[in-house]
Image (cartoon, rainbow, N blue to C red; front, side):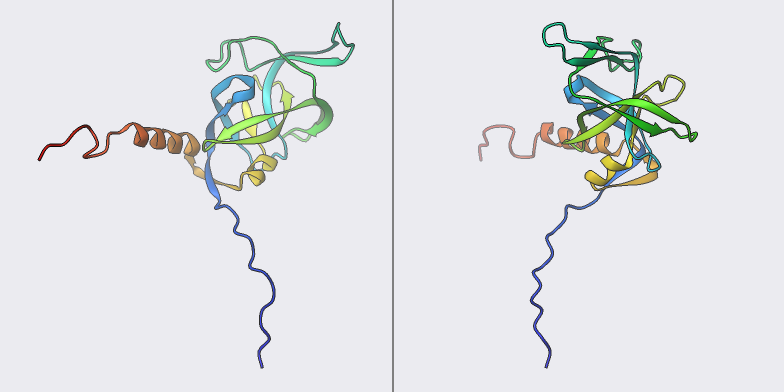
Length: 179
């Protein structure tokens, strides 16, 4: 006689979504939109280009504050204003060439497929690299993303199609109808 299966049915996980080798992302908490990011399954932590990094105490509270300029001043997604972070960390990060660097790490929000994901970004000088932002495995795992290296801008294209669909008038809904 066969025993009945008493295990509860597994919870449905959200479907995996595809990212291309390069994506246009938004970082709404930082006021950045349409930033080019390289998707890198070899990197654990995400990274963002910055310059003018300094830590200074807040004159009012004495609390340490991290001051940076994200992206290059001529980058179209930035206005060049300095940003300040009260919550940050400093960690040893292994770069792609195997060198270990002490980097500051911040937490912010990344928008992909119209959904916001909290992610950590190490701050690095990426001025000699093609893409100012690198998306690492922790973000890919959190969003259940898979990477198709033959594609690009999958999230952005999907969002554009969805927006166009909302704006497109549907047949028979453009006003009163007389028979």
